[in-house]
Length: 471
Image (cartoon, rainbow, N blue to C red; front, side):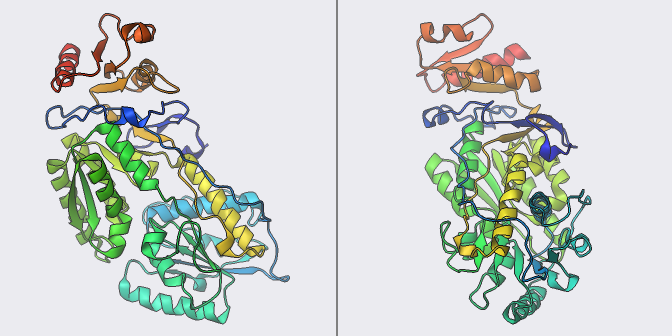
């Protein structure tokens, strides 16, 4: 069984154990609990607050439609593919799409080949010989611009010429570059836009509810980055957040800078930005700019939000070493794929990838069964599960949590996390009276507890006491 199919628990992620914690296991905490404490990392560099806040997430279900295999008037459907360049997220998106198409019967159910490193046009070469009786995928219909703007212009023209001529029946536009180039009014061939950070902000689609063009559909999770950043701040309580980004229109979208600025204003923390060069052909220059930025941010920010950069894909081990050495909590925008390799936290994308693959496959099938792309549901939200890298998290010295919480109380939360972190120290707090919280076991001798409301210095004194006694 692959990591993506494994249930809740610990998974060997190659760079420390990867802990998947489901919403049903970790408490949902109301917003009132979210702002309880803000701890400055500079005072307690190993401190990490683990109180998980989940906003409601789910998926809107479209009307039941025929999605199974069919022929195009007795002929195979001819499928095209276009991407801006190699990116690991595209590999995962294509792999789960193909698994979804196998479940629907569009292609034969077989084990997909393992792809490692940077791979352009993932699985498309394999598909040219394995598409089966319903689909035709030819090498000359699959393109990658390799993050070269000059090559991009030529590919866009060739693809549009094919679409205008009706040579293709459906095209997969992978990522923002491809979505912008093909989701236009210059043709009417169905375009399935996948793996974009913000298709509305990029101008690929009109809104989450309506793509704005009959032949275009994309996937969007409108509040994805809002949920991520609010949750990260409530867990860690940082006073400053570092983000490396590319200062281009697309780069601002890939790194969700607009949303980060909104949450910084909302929650009162400082945003520290560092510019990188990312979508260029000179990968050595790109990688060095990334490393330099994250070194700078590890010295100046309390926490780091690791966004959708190709240089992170190539240099992730170096980034993880930087964060661990500086004891800087990190959160991955793209999901648990980076958590398995050492980033501290993210929304768990494992179960989400499987569901997303089925969602994309169902849209693919519905389009080839005659449904207009504009009629298809575009909103698909990430599941509310969290991923934690336990090797990175072993630096955690203290858990701070409320006693009374929905679904799971603070003591149960501490017991759950202590199973993964044996050296975890705990500080419980509550505004309830002793007789209400006594049966939760937090008033016992040796248990650190603080009564709310408390003075400004009280949390720091209690934290120091817990750390000193654990030393």
